[in-house]
Length: 106
Image (cartoon, rainbow, N blue to C red; front, side):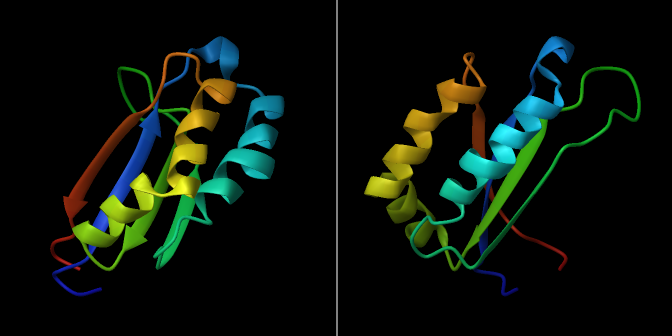
């Protein structure tokens, strides 16, 4: 990946009570496939991390890679981007943390 690549990271910590096979299924069947249709997406992946130390691990992490920040911004502002945002309350009533960063050291 070039230095210009941007990574948009959707990350939400959910309480242990929400950590269920049913919720993982919903994310695998609905939320992640919908996010995978964002225009301009180069690649993506998602995971259900396990805690390694003190504190809570996010329930699910979705990473979406775009050619640059402008492509990511356009994807998030697109019709699909609005559908992805509207879907968040279906699996995370408290919302999601969205951040982006330039990939370094790759």
